[in-house]
Image 1 (cartoon, rainbow, N blue to C red):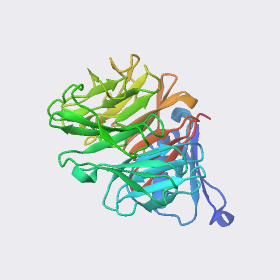
Image 2 (tube, helix red, strand yellow):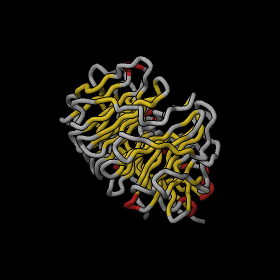
Image 3 (cartoon, helix red, strand yellow):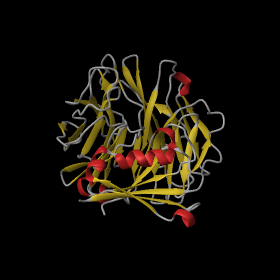
Image 4 (cartoon, rainbow, N blue to C red):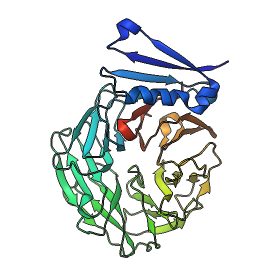
Length: 382
């Protein structure tokens, strides 16, 4: 019988206990027993640094993940991976985190004066440079920037519209970025910067198709908007409809496409969108109030978002974030009940950890975050 092996290393007690190996049958693997054990160990707050390496085999497709010590119990909603060594994360109560040693240690802190904010998105470019976006009604939607590794944060933008609510942001490069807000007076709100955030200016909504009643974006993971190349940008919606807006000129003009995605109430629709090139993209989502519903909750496009085809990958559930991992030729999707990997046309469940957000860097380092300070790093294929 094949097994998955859970190896726990705790430096503080390694000399006493050595290596503890817990073997789980394939049935336990499918049921997510290893994930529940990993989460339990993490949430019990071991004081010394530890790593949980879960070796998944058999039906778990030989994937590996590491549960990292975050030094916080906040609900983490945003993550950005710069390299194999550098990553940032963000969450409730003005919290941000940074690692510069590949997750061996994370430094958690709060942005001064932002303790009441919920940072749903973070976009980083180095160990020093990062942007934070908080989601909330009116002036609770803000954008901050650091250029010194988080020692100081500059408030760059405060939403001036009491009816507005910002959801996510994306950057083509260090200087050029765009942020998305829910509809105000029947049109989605977009702001953009050309100078690294020194100024954020609202884009004209006159060239954008109007929003449909009860249509909005989801601030679940900071991935409801995606950019590619030098000028392409897409954003995804939910609620009464599930649509994808697209622009090839950085938001000067827009078109919109219907999708066959689940929708119809305020808790369902597309929560995450990603593109690996100008033509090939995906959307993920579902109904967050019914996270175990199978969907289908993944769809793909091969024509730049003009048309979308539902995925037959199984199992599925509500996904709050999804990303392409080109280095490992796979797709990853995460949510509160299921982490899915799709490679070579085959889908496999690799954990049942509760996760909110996901990011992958060019080298294939994938990091996901979730409630109670959960941080998980996924390796490539073994």
